[in-house]
Length: 499
Ligand SMILES: [Ca+2]
Ligand SMILES: [Ca+2]
Ligand SMILES: [Ca+2]
Ligand SMILES: [Ca+2]
Image (cartoon, rainbow, N blue to C red; front, side, top):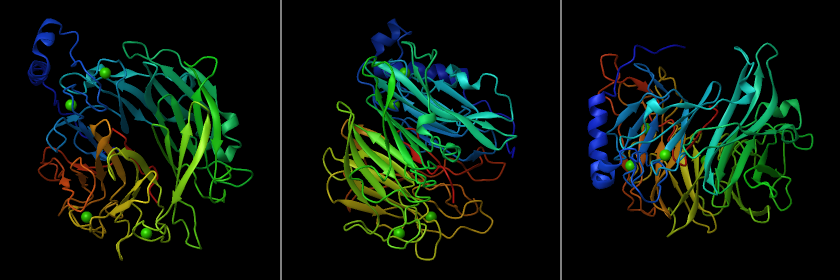
């Protein structure tokens, strides 16, 4: 569907120069004036700090922007004050790709294109868009295409973009040739030729192909790829998760270390038909979270489950951690049919305790009373039995669970459809939650975003509501969009598959 209208030039040369001057001046006047070729501040890079002022910038994705197709909104103040970015992509992943301290993004359109966009003192600069060409795309012509996802990380001082994908053959209605491409970026952040890992051993049969990849995560040289459709010992769509670490002989390269499933020694449960183990994965500082949203427990169909683990990279060894669902003692709520708990996951810090590692579970498919897909978000400590669950009914959380109007394109608010983080310090994050299905008055499916106050979650947490940045939702308004809060860019995970 092409709903898009003519383009609006948002970035005037005058505004860009002014911001550049002010941004550089505030940050480091002497350096900026003398060496304009080193525009970003000196210091420790902060993930998602595109303008290099030392604090992360908030990026919010919308499902659709009907006026000009700009789907990313960037706010250096982490509010709803900011600019729309003219970047063609489905979602963004923040990382410093060229080592200049300003954070950059990997801009991903899973069926079409992969681009790198670099930060600058005036924020992400769409003019720096640099295509990443996958070797698998050579000779592939529409309607055949390469379907992929990607992650970015820095290992041993080298920025790396890792792409997992497969070739879709439209006439045959099937996929083939699963792969992993590892692009080590040059010092200027440009991609060269990748290390190509043929993935057939990870994708045991044709039926397993369609889930490659269902989710990806990376940190500290480790890459985790979920395949929710994987056949495990003959069990269809049970799901598996591949863990890649560094090649012992050549640490610049990735090497497969393990293929995890619910049949892994010590892992609770077992691989059953349609579990979708690995539909979502999150990985940070050796902590691994795996979603099993279609797991059925005690006769409750697709109530879902989350499995935690620690990956000891130095020994290529998995330490199985706790697993929990909504019936686990201490977890608010209960397992209900088709909750699909574990469909959206990220790992945040400092939400349940000082310096804690916490798994954030978005459950947009959770009902609230008789309201379908109102959604919930559960935050659980990685190690302690501390859990908190939020809905739009929770004290302090703005809004309320709403029944979707029949004319809306979404079936509910989908609170928890997207979760993301904003680093407030190296050991504490602000949590950001999107409910892109939210209808606001006459504006159907316009969306909703809230963030926490950057402190440990408690009964006195102050939630900031970031109203959609628009005057209304008719074509006479500046921006007309659907799904404000569909994704973020830092620690960002969102529901890949609507029910
Ligand atoms: Ca910033
Ligand atoms: Ca950069
Ligand atoms: Ca429930
Ligand atoms: Ca609502």
